[in-house]
Image (cartoon, rainbow, N blue to C red; front, top):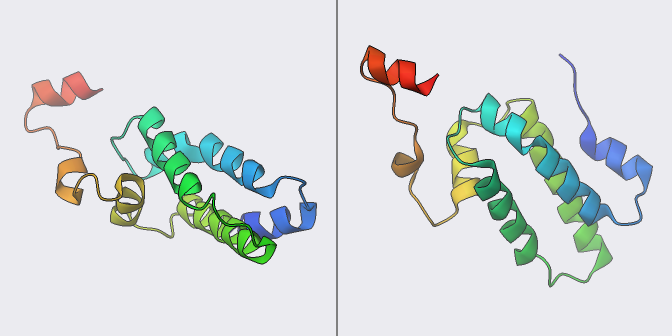
Length: 119
């Protein structure tokens, strides 16, 4: 099994703006993660949820805490890409307190017409 080791690569690269680099990496991988986990959330809405998560930590000024949060962000991204997370984990992370898991779960087609319309 291949390991991505995104956090190790990011730490070794020593970026000037690590938070912006992490945000770009996550925004770039959102379509793939949504496809892997079969999550029926628009990409723009998923990016908005990620943006809100970053804004929640915008007040942090301590460099050690920022480095820890960036490291955790890369590890979460890597776990999602390697499918170590489960679908409800990502849904709760993307939706937060807005919607429950049952409201977001994709409805399965019940007949051939619905199946045809989805593809």
